[in-house]
Image (cartoon, rainbow, N blue to C red; front, side, top):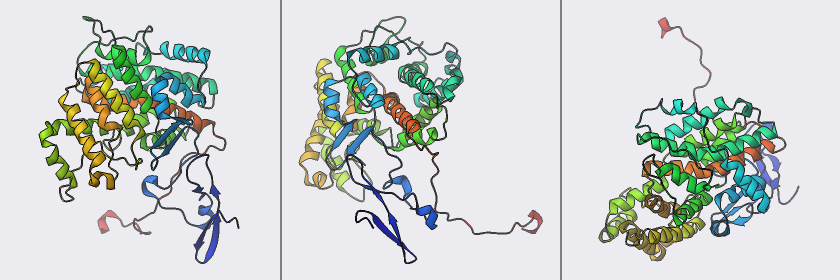
Length: 428
């Protein structure tokens, strides 16, 4: 037996399970042969199960590390832009100047939506949540691009990837415009990715909108920070849907629907709502004491993370971005930001927070930034979905291209009745 392998004993019979090593992170025990021995692993939520192998994103929650294709998120957020990061996620390497120009141009010239999609938007109630509209419109794209259903065709996959990356910002912006009863603003090829989204969100036929470079850069950074985050719930949903060779637009719509859940994509909205509830620095102590009281059921939003047991590496970047945006807008005295800074100071110095590793996370600051950009809270999760589209596409394409592809088929622990005989309705 290999000393590095795991040995499991069932009914006194040893079963040797090989271990697999990645390029970073802990080894995993390969349990794929367990079924032939009459048993399976039980892991609700897949918290200790590697569902795939991937070369896209690496997270070390203990060390507070986040790498895209080996590049630290801090370097990418400082030196790159969101489309360059999308190229990196898709291709595994950073583009050269010519590749970058070609990639940007393709995205820029695919931002328009099919004109008949206007009719789809008009089928919704005006008060429909933007995420409900996004899920539907993204999924409906499959009807406009039926050739995309052949996911084994690399050329068609590539076209679909560009269409998704380019059109989802338009879908998100129009979902908001429709919700507000405002006419749609068409994308502008002269603008960059983040600038274009801000333009579609804020411009009207009555008044033009010139994107502020500092604000556009802040939004671009948000797109980078949220582009991918390993095998989270929505990414796993995209992979599971895609494992059946479903249409790529349907797969991204599935991921968007999963992200909509409040346990996944609504954290920055909850953090902002908490800051608004606190309302004044003088009330911070009251809320901190409630958080420390185990019987209160209250917790401070934006602190701690399911994955990061150290400082969220994205939080420091977003904190700096928050300073830049508020300074640019002359909002450095913003009361919510003052509350956030005071809470941050407490979390980094108070023994309770340190012991429980409740450090500020990226959501703690991103809500303040989005609010300063004039983006309403109803759009926060839509922004998240827009940003995550680049990573979802990369993960979907990687899965399709991986040799030995298999459709996802999780097992279960059955707890229902044993065999019973049917009894006619008159005898029950």
